Image (cartoon, rainbow over all chains, first blue to last red; front, side):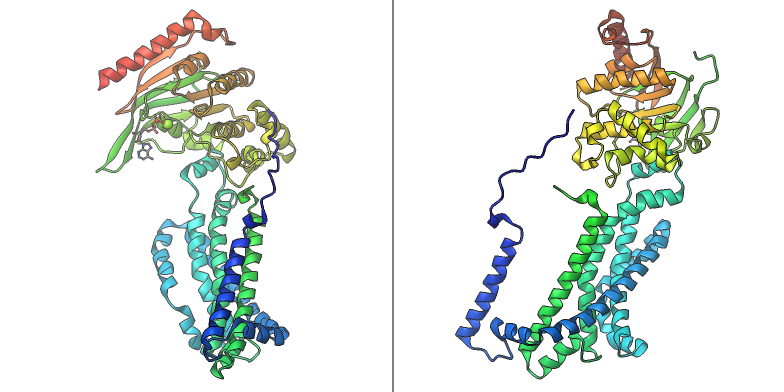
Length: 263
Length: 262
Ligand SMILES: Nc1ncnc2c1ncn2[C@@H]1O[C@H](COP(=O)(O)OP(=O)(O)OP(=O)(O)O)[C@@H](O)[C@H]1O
Ligand SMILES: [Mg+2]
């Protein structure tokens, strides 16, 4: 028996690359937007043309990126705290099926609770600085991570567990060699959702107050004085950090789960 | 053979699944005694409790009634002593481990010296014809290859008893016959005791020293057929008149029991 050689097929044309279609859509939408603004001439504060947003972005790129970084740090801080707590609690909850049954419905229901609405209360508790934003983000990341981790830690098939039992494996071995690897895809799905959630949480929490060198405050201030191109430029920067966060986690996922790499 | 103390003793064992409202009698009053070094096959129609019997012996399920002894111990003690290796009806490989790492799993869990892992695993993978696929993940293998990987895993730690639930069910005829020869070879050189479930009468006759014929609803032992074909068995064995006689005996018993029961 011999290993099958994988012969590289003909190089796919550039149109088949995965990023080509989204790029075309993006260019088309921006083009259409610019054209419509040129034709209908709405007031700039209502809908600025993309070219104006671009000018605003280019004109204060360094400042916006540094505001964005400050907000990004809040998001990461909240993400790390919320996700870690979610994992730790999940480990305890998953040990007892009865406890999971009792707690999971509440945790799932919390998905529909607008946690950002608690930002003013968080400011009362943790101050006007980054602490209150980190707290909000942490709470927002905690529940989805915990729910997914409990599901993942209890997802091993009865036969997969029976196999370990047939080797007289210890509980710790079943946990570390079976339950944890089984849970990884679940956990990383939650992490990826939390990257978006944490940027949103940090920015919206900033709308309720904070220092000027943060993205949320900047967006709110510029919009309130009708400098909407600046607000749009800041939103673009927020998108950039959000995507960056997502790709870091996706890379980590690929690295930790090599078996999921399809050819 | 059966004179010495049995290595597996099943005494009036019943297994009922479910609760009072909806229950299945999977096994009823099953008694069976297997001597050390025997090769016993369980045959019978689907649902007659073959897997259940294996799982009770392996302490993966508890009997509702009756007693089981494995190497003189209760099943839970025998399991903790790692007396047996189990091949499940489904391959049950871990997705995140390569073929090689899957086959190493029992050695790793049992804390065997790390230096022994590779030689043992290499040997078993070569035997099941998967040496070139040692670094592949399960999803990269066909169903038959996955099943062979799971057999290599069960053999890797050299258990004295092998409980095999339709291990070759997913294999083509050629591979299956080759695996039959390899298994007989291992059985004879290492003096294992093997309890083997199969749907194939010819496979059961070819491999076994005894065949246990079971019937369903409730799962019972209908007959035990002694297979007096001499070992070592070869390709010629399959062509001998006695082989065909014994196949007919087993087939007739199965048919009779099945018809008689309906
Ligand atoms: N976990 C379970 N819960 C409830 N009933 C079960 C369970 N496992 C098996 N049974 C029932 O017990 C009976 C025997 O099942 P078993 O799996 O032992 O059959 P089998 O002889 O191995 O069949 P096959 O040849 O199809 O594998 C069946 O009627 C089945 O429905
Ligand atoms: Mg079965």
